[in-house]
Image (tube, rainbow over all chains, first blue to last red; front, side, top):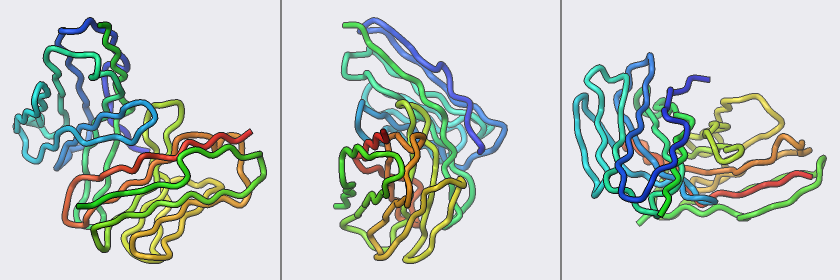
Length: 113
Length: 112
């Protein structure tokens, strides 16, 4: 099925470092979502982006909806150990009940205290 | 507020046995419901989605099936499990007018 190209696949960083990950696609999306999944739990929404060029922050997290509507990035500043987990991007296609999320394969983040 | 529950949390089943996983949503009506499978802690694979009672759309052909007997209940089933059915099964819901999907806590299935 259709997927987003999410990179990097994994990151191992030191506490306090900044993190950047991104998703790209050949398709145009009308919404971008970023989720975080802790081990053994369901993904939790971090940031939702609804307009091209939109830049949104949630604490130490910042995400942007690419101007071409085909990409998005997520930045985490001053990482801490609890940032560990898998981060997923998702782009939305369609409208109404035909809306469908296309998922990236995830970025696994490990933080060394 | 809305909550989503999945049952059971963990399940170990022999190959060839049947399966029934349950997902229920509280605090909303007529949600869109989704079943995903996640293998090895990585990408989410959409299995089924439902826009209403008795309405099921299958995304991937497999030996699994889904049913929606009530507005806020979504069930994932199999008549005979395969080893390859092992994984982490996630249920999600979305209000039809919203963009975002919200996930349940998941069921970890191990088929031996």
